[in-house]
Image (cartoon, rainbow, N blue to C red; front, side):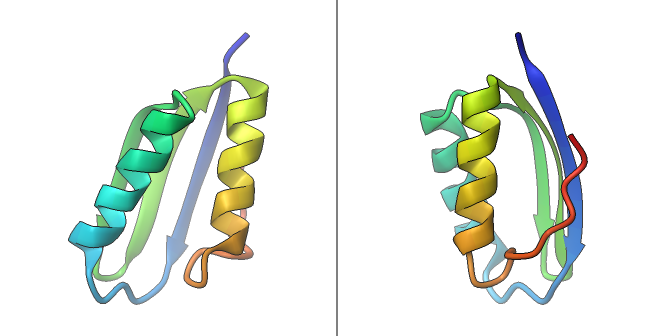
Length: 74
């Protein structure tokens, strides 16, 4: 069964292209589908995947210096 994760966080991102590339790599590795909008002023995403993939993505985000403490909607 697939689960959906929604979130946004307003935060200053110096190099959004590099951050987006990293997010794409993580999402691909975790087999997550959806969209990630990332710009100089923050991130907004809707992702879907297995419960385990969503859990691992949340762990990745909570360890990220810019995105820790993001308020996820599951």
